[in-house]
Image (tube, rainbow, N blue to C red; front, side, top):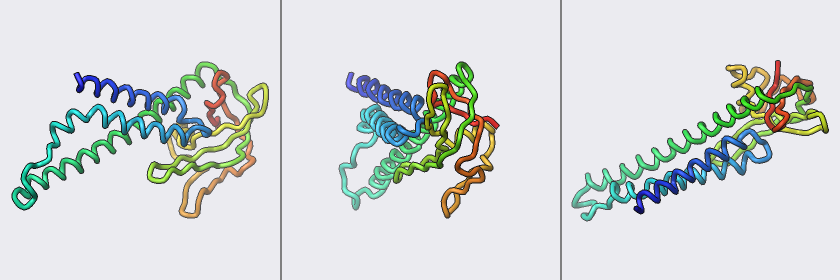
Length: 201
């Protein structure tokens, strides 16, 4: 019963992390919060769901290291392997959430979009220590009612063209951009969710 409850709670936390990631990963205002929340939910979800298996599989040796060195080496080796496995799965879940968000953006752009002129007003890098970074175009455009500023993940712009963006690259000296700030661009945005945007070239 306890094992089943752990698995249900763990899967629920993982799914919640994926939902948050798939809904808000594109949003510049929430990216850092969503990144931290999703990492915590993935780590908690995996830990909770694997606790029963961990306890059974990873029992501490009864004899000390001098008496049974191979058993202790195997014990620590299993611990290191388990942590590496958890990290690998968390990275995979993060990438899955990002792909789901990209596909969700494309769904709304294909169903209720408009085209307008936009202006690149800045380039933003959000950097979370030991958890990765993300780069955004900050774009101003008129959604038919007012001028708004929205972020566009540069990765998404690259994926739209199925290649690396020649207008943007990262070097040791910082961000190098061929499209200067203030450059006019054509963009497509979702009428229902204007935070979903795409550069049209």
